[in-house]
Length: 122
Image (tube, rainbow, N blue to C red; front, top):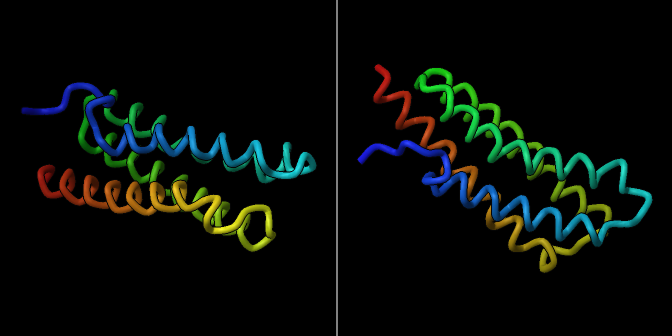
């Protein structure tokens, strides 16, 4: 059965969970990071499910792949920012374990979906 709604994609659902986790995490960052790292992380996190939704809504496999690649870029950006939080001592790996695990899973899912769509488009 084909997926007709972006909300049916497990990767979108997990990306939404990651947004919630990132918002939870950024509340714990130092106040002076409110307009720096915190905002960047939130924007990157929100970008992932947003681009999955927009791409699926375009009704074109090539457009969907393009937006999934944008989501993958935002995912890489967020993953880097999570690592920055650890390196700066704003969070330890235990505090961000859920976000890191979700991020890893989403990265794999995005790559897999892109591969599958490319294979069916040929």
